Length: 291
Image (cartoon, rainbow, N blue to C red; front, side, top):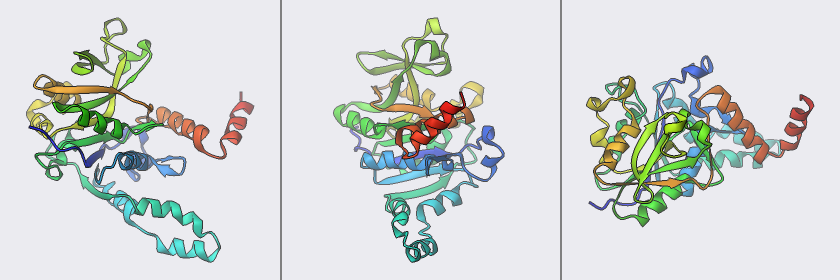
């Protein structure tokens, strides 16, 4: 079956982010700031750059109203006050958020097992049987390029694709921290090895949360297919798909950084500020003074 090119994206933030407690009990991890935008907005903007028309955010029950407010609340009282004080231009950042394509916020199906595949399975009703779609883990940010666009371009180039996944070349000494790709026949996926020993890794290509999938994945993301720690894993489902058809692996054209834990979040936030904010020179000066 030939699937339609993606116009929909699923972005996941359905975990309880226990490493971020106590703040995560009130604020979803994807709403933590990078500069003056939340992590989630970077993921949405990556989708918009690739022409995605409908974004489904899978959140916790506590996070759902926060995301709905962020992407829909026009805060007109703020706009009016800004205009009254001659600062109306500052509202443009809010208007950009309001102008995003359609965003639907749902919660994870509580009947599904724990695991990073369950938020994807929870969005099944929003995906038609004949359309491919993209998936982003909001933990993962990509700077300098839209991985979603790379995924869509690759899918459109490969008529036999049942999926496309992103990879980043990492230092060989770091392979034991990530899922590592074994390729076959060029850039087709053979399998993924989770956290291999350094001397047994099949490559230095690391997997992270950027995927283009077809509805066939929903046949794999079912409770009977739980894996390590009795969890439902997306990479397990993709590996099984690769035994039945072609799944392609593409190297990112940008730079992948993670916000999955406080240390990496701080590093990612700092790198973004140093690369993009107009106060970066002051931050560099401050850091240099503390050596």
